Structures are given as C-alpha cells and as structure tokens.
Image (cartoon, rainbow, N blue to C red):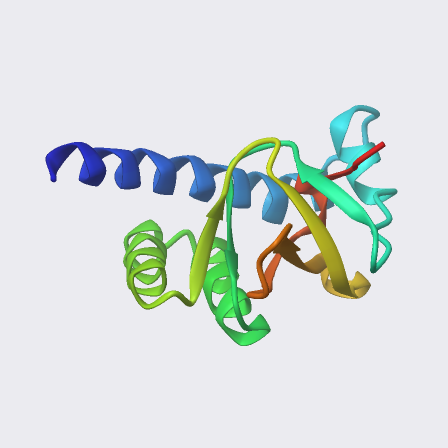
Length: 135
C-alpha cells in the first residue's frame, strides 16, 4: 500500500512539473529548441502516436481543463487531489512513456488531443506536445 502511494505521489509531481513547463514555458520562450518543436507540433486524427513522457489524461475535456487550471494557478495540492480523485473514479488514466495510442479528435487552439490506447475504447484528453508520430 505504501509503495503505491509513493509511486502516485512521485508520478503526480512529475506530471505537475511537466504541465507547469508546458503552461508557462512555451508561451514565454522564443528561443530555438524543444519549445519550437512543440509549437509546430501537428496531430492528425485517426493516426497512431506514442507518448514521449509519462502523463495523465482525462475522459472529458472539462475535467482536463479544470486540472490545467489548477496547474496554471500553481495550486499543486488541488491538482494532486484532483488527479487522485479522477484516477480512482476512472475519469483519468496514466499514460507511460512509449505507450501507443490512436488520436480520435483534436482541439488545436487548446493544444489538446483525444486519444485511446490500442485495443481499448475509453478516450482521454492529453496535451499534444507529449505525442510523437509512430513511424
């Protein structure tokens, strides 16, 4: 039981750190590098992708936007609690680095994509910069 709590806590911190970097770093950084590749990142529906990092996805766009709001407010405690609640109810799913998914929808202006794991029917909203095209 303790081991899983530690894993969830560490995973939460990694996800929160990544979301903060994406929410604040990409809009302020105009130098070349990873942020420039993120801004030109284009995801197409019905194609196969893989994750370049471990992240969390949410079943509804409203839940995902609520989670991102906690991140933007830098309310890490609320973000972690929201993650835990959503993971327990199935509203959220953890995607590990190199998990392969299909994209079914995009929200380009919000930099989000709706994906599902191969062989599964549940779909989750995630941030596009974490997706890489499967070749």
